[in-house]
Structures are given as structure tokens and as C-alpha cells.
Length: 246
Image 1 (cartoon, rainbow, N blue to C red):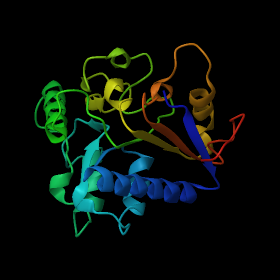
Image 2: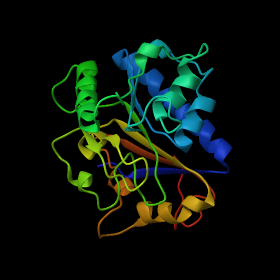
Image 3: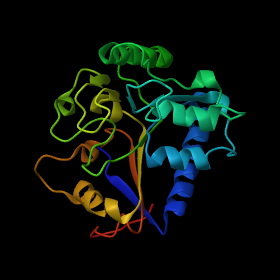
């Protein structure tokens, strides 16, 4: 089980740059080895970092296969739609990513059906019946320690037999979402969190330095045979007892 590798950088700008450097390195290594790069994206600040920093980087975008670690069950026209954020920056208007290489959920069917369809879409693209192994998952963390749409004390934390699940009672709106579950998340080759700002310092400490008890969802991300990377600026890392660098 992977222990976190923590890098503390001076600023949010340096975190964004380091994040995009790592993503492109992972992509190019995967393409060289496997002929493709499978990646799961998240919204929030992760979307901002990636959409601003990835265009113009040297990589074979035609070999990228882009999915979502979680997605809000809202129309593509809704500003809450994570897919639309990435599509507008990476696909539309001459963006580098081919549109057929990004895989959104279907918001026009019930959320339970959307989750099943997305599971089948992932399995079909990977060409496997077992749990797929993503090259990279790029994860966010909320102020309550949630990641993807996996919230503290929610029943989805206990899911062991599904790789994708619907949620209709998210404590953070909108209530309906489709999310990866821990069997899929912890099967990845590498997971990366990027957190910045003093407002994240307390929850970063709780996730990275908690001992015993019921771990917060973000603390449950521990790839069983892969890497776990945390990129923090100094403000987000300010309450950690120890700070190390990759």
C-alpha cells in the first residue's frame, strides 16, 4: 500500500507547474510503454491547474483516454458540469485533445443508469472484465476531507463490488453524482492530490497525519500497488509536523 510522497512548494503557481510536469511525464511514459494514457480528472482547482497548464505541453494527445473521477449529474450546459470545463479548454477552439478521447457521463438518463453506463464504458475502453488499472488519477479534496463524490460517513465508502457508483444524496450540491469507488481508485498506478491555500491546512493535516479512528475519504486513497503523490503549497502544508520533498 502506497505511503504518500509529499512535495511542498512555494506557491500555487509552482504547484500547478509541478502538477502539469508530472502529468505529462506520466502520460509520455505510459504512451511509450502501453501505447495509450488512461487518466481520470477532477473538477475544482484541479481543473483550473490542468486547463491552464497542459495546453502546449509536448505529448501525443491522440493517445490520451480521459475519464472523470466523479461528475455531477447535470446537463452539459450547467456551469457545474466538470466535463464542459475541460471540453471548453482542451477540446474546443483548436484544443489539443481529440473530442472522441474524452468520455463524459450521460446526464440525460437517471443517475443510477448513468453510473451503470459509465462503468460499462470504462470496461469497454479498457477491454477488461476485472477492475481497470488507470495510469493516473488526479484527485481533489474538499474541506470535509471528501474526494471524488465519496463523503465522510457515507455508505459509498464501504462499496467493494462496484467500480462506479451513483449518489443521490450528496451533502454538497448538486445531490446527484456519478463517482469512482475505492476499488477502482486504489487500483491505479498513480494518484495525485494538489491542494493550496491556508484554508486547506487543517484538513491536509487531518488526512496526512491522522492516526487511528475512522479515516477521512481522502486518507483512504492508498493505491495497493502504485504511487500516491501530494503536491502542496507552503500555506496548505503549514500545519504538518514534517515536510518532505520528492
